[in-house]
Length: 155
Image (cartoon, rainbow, N blue to C red):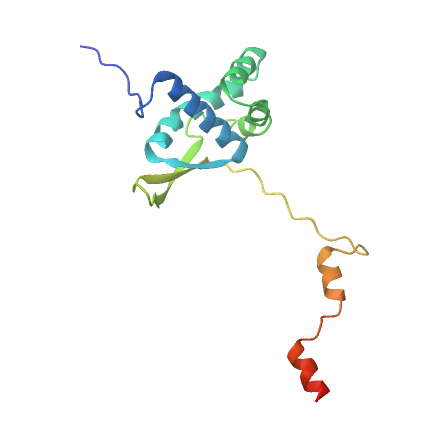
């Protein structure tokens, strides 16, 4: 007897599952990392692989499909412009699941889901010579004397 494939129900009906995973994938794309439960993270891994592989095709049909699937156009744009280009030779395994610890309320395992290849960090801006930064303006002001010091000087 043939058995159906592995599926994650997560105690939800079909529409709720679809909405949950659409929101999780969109949040992962926009924020680069998300915290969720272990069961949701395991279910999310294969769905993210499918979404990224579709984005790597980069044609009009797949862009329309992903625009309809994901919750925001910002997520679709970032997926095509940034994330799909990070994985040119990889077919699967785009995300990493890192155990953080147990949640305090119900003791369920919380997982950090993040991309295997992170975005390059931008360098912090260096202050330009001649311009006054907020830190410099605070330092240049004289500090007010404390009341105890004033009383000692008066005596």
